[in-house]
Length: 412
Image 1: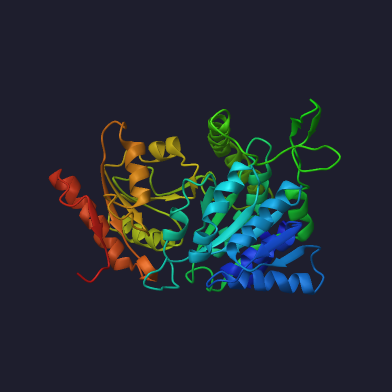
Image 2: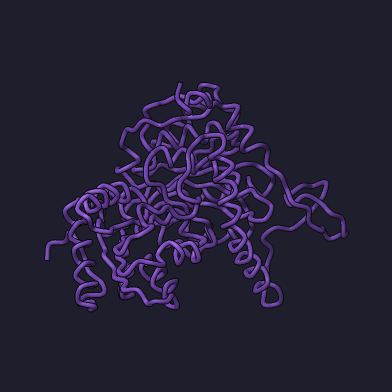
């Protein structure tokens, strides 16, 4: 009997969207509000079947737009409900205003984003431009490599978002079509195990206008105000509180990740970053999402030839795990940061900006270059990844960086 079987788990063939829906089904969610958009639609379609079949006791709200969907989740969370939504691309862009409102109100909404390119031109396939736009919106961001991690991350997300020391919304990204529509074996926990893990939502105590300690939720019996007009007298302090919650989040993410590992047998690095053959690596790539699986194959091939290659996968992009990144790359001589989005006019992609900044004061100063790839769903082949490692070898050999930012897999 395998360790997975001993834990009472079963294997189900699920695409990434179905893995999200199955996890949400197990998490005792009170309200799901959503509007369909490719490649996310399967998530809420599947969950609506669970509602119809009586498998969940959830209020399912079909709204007229993504803006309204997140507004429903925000208001439901404010009165104490556990809430979930899902979207992608232009849908996430339409939510933009309410993402800031949700984090500012400290509403622990969980959202799955099936990452998809933004128009124009119209494109329904994967890149990370949609969620990278929201990196400063006050949402925790987690990116999954495969459908198993999608399932596991959604379950962990409710615990993280609702933790009294965090109380921030969380976005779980899964690569559109590469994961959302690809069938994989997923080990799922028994319903009661997940229910016990997420437990019931708990509320910190705050002082109301009468000086009474009351639960932090809207309740006519214990009135408080959430999201009021907040001018120059207090707005700055409330923004600082959001940043302090972000600073507390890494340790809580790691703790909940470890607790989940105890019941599932699965770990993804330390919950913030995953290292792959980095212990003695001289060359390293950094990426988010499903590309990591392909990179690992290339790393293995290079290792078999004696090349000291490795990979750092960023699992939690917000909050950025700066110290974990520095520690993981301490012995690496050349680094290629792979961005599946472009910061137009910004001299490199958004992940590159963050990583290079984090490493700026590291000693010794490491050669760090940027490769923008896969926009609009373009494949990133093993051959192209191998070429990146070859470029890193040349940088170490010559001590020079010819091109700081490059596009890979592009017709010039």
